[in-house]
Image (cartoon, rainbow, N blue to C red; front, side, top):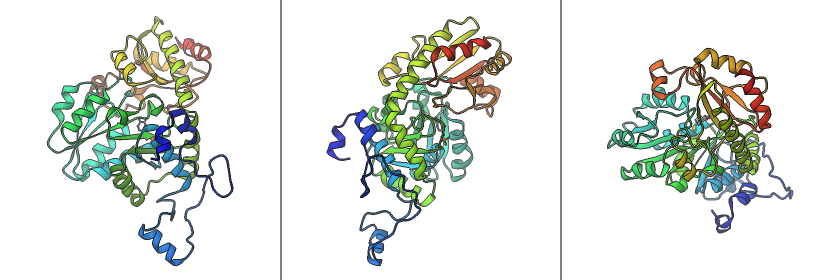
Length: 392
Ligand SMILES: *Cc1c(COP(=O)(O)O)cnc(C)c1O
């Protein structure tokens, strides 16, 4: 990172970082839709292939539009390097494949994205990587789970769908005391609300599909960290393994970064208003939102984050039938498992995102049949309340 970027504030970096104007003098960032790049001569091609001379060769390796997105996100997260991927899952896969080998052990929060669990259990396990799952906020359990061959601690905070908050600094210290790395999936907060690298995490992974796009259009992901592990190891796997980001998607995401902070603030304002309102509804048993003083890690969230985010969940009295009825009576809020959109979305975790878990696993994780999750969008908050109230 250049000295100049080091000095610039988040708002400036969000709008300007990474821009490389071409000879056409365009003001907005261009989309380079090209699979390969030409060399001036055979000698030039040889020098670029050998790495002796910098320059683009092929868009699986580097692409100018993707590079703007990577430099901008790296700047916002405070990392040395970012590499973009075709999806959030590709970012998690690339991190694991690049940094782990047969015989290594991972300690993972049990409250992570379902496909992350499947990736670890069904695929990395095939190559001899073992995973132990622990409750996100049980620090003794994290500590007990660590073995001499533990290489990675992995978590999401806030967790989905119960919005539990982990102490990132504490888990980073624990990881480092055992020469392991802490990887944080920052899809829910984004760097606008939390910068895990500044709290001691080694690597941040993203599903850009969520708030970085913010308007439900593209699938993409990213890994942010240092020049060695991310810049060499993870990037090395990606350019060979193949799940690179398309230039068009990179352009959508880099434009998303320009408004990210303001959108995250607006999502947080709307979500807090709805969470407080839900707490007062007699048909609702409990609301899970870190911005509420009733949330068990409210203070932790206040210390660690600059906003509480756009996702909340709540238990309705009466279980699944009542939860489904509530969802089915919504006319504005969309029934879809995606989140981080300007449009509010609603899900019933027990029968969708978390339906693969057994009843015991779901109960242990606190995901009841009456639980409803809402990703609060940017519609008018009174319209949203009216939509929820119809089914209550
Ligand atoms: C959606 C999501 C992912 C996976 O990202 P994709 O872009 O769908 O591959 C990973 N982690 C979290 C927290 C997510 O919400």
